Image (cartoon, rainbow, N blue to C red; front, side, top):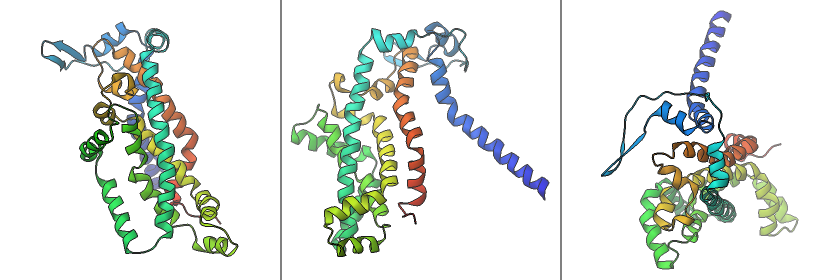
Length: 293
């Protein structure tokens, strides 16, 4: 029995190792290839895109996956960080767009979730069901209505066209409502007996109990909007206002090395956020906002 147990654990470990390698390989390749020279990148991967009279066409060639560069070069980073400030401008465009969305969405979602938690009735159930339907719709379905509303408000080609729809997205409202419903009602009743107002109950009782959920949602929302492409392409015609994710979605021939360096820099905020908030993320998802004893 012990032998079978060890064999089973070994198989599980090997399977997990294979999956971990498969998931980490693109990230590792991106980081290591960013330190290669443009010549070495061309030699290993060939012409990924060929330019024809009709535009870009994909060229299928033999690819030599290489993790360790023959010669470490910082030329790509020097170009991105010093010689061509456009990349840094686009990076800060991403920050300017995403950070307000995260904070506004958490603030609005917290108030809405508290209202859904404290307000009982059929109307609340209908409105909450409407939120769930909106959450299930992919962004591509609501892109045209968002464009029409933004055009009516006169905010097309401004950052508000991205920030305002993101601030009122239903995803955070749905999750926070589920978390707040798990806060013991006895705590709220005790606070009300002591003379606490609704605002006091919201800020001193509910929000502290949902701390893990708030961190989890903040990480998920940040990663989601940090990688957005469709919204800025449609709503921001001015390329000077577009985030860096748009550049990464349309790489030209001769810019593959730069793209590796830019992608590595672009991964840093999400990796730091995930590593710094991993404990809260796991706790928020695992415990569903339950109260510790």
